[in-house]
Amino acid sequence: MAVRGGAVIRRRMKIIQRNVRDAVSKQMDDIADDLLLRSNLLCKIDEGDLIGSSGIAHRNSRDTFIRVVYYDTPYAERQHECTEMGNGPKTALRPASPLGDGKPGRKWLSRPYKRHESRYIKEIGKAVQTALRESVR
Image (cartoon, rainbow, N blue to C red; front, side):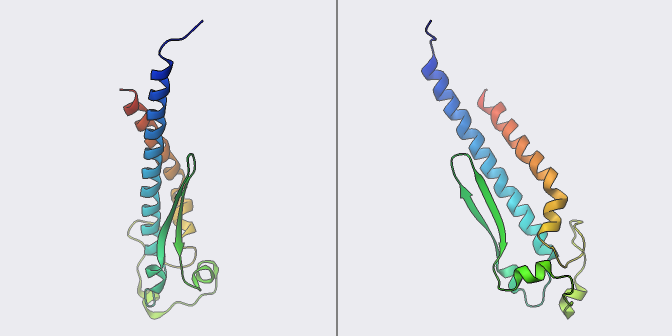
């Protein structure tokens, strides 16, 4: 038994796949931007080099989307992990994050990620749902 319309279905599926990939990639960009903002608000500041070295690396393949929020200074990892890091004069005066993620200090990158991880996952799911809904119209 032959099924008619197979070529149409394959074309439509490619469009749906592309729309979902584009939606996930955009949502991952938005999440990385949000995490970078939140983590920069929690960084210790003395001269601003740490925040100035921050950025987002992107890598997409056919079905993998990677975003890495990074800090590119020789001391970034040590300050992120160190429990005994002293506070400089500017750090001590820095207020808590206006986004509600806590006070500046250690674990400035992992704290907001862990706090918002479930929301980030839900946002990716919503982006996929929206892309699918819009693709079948």
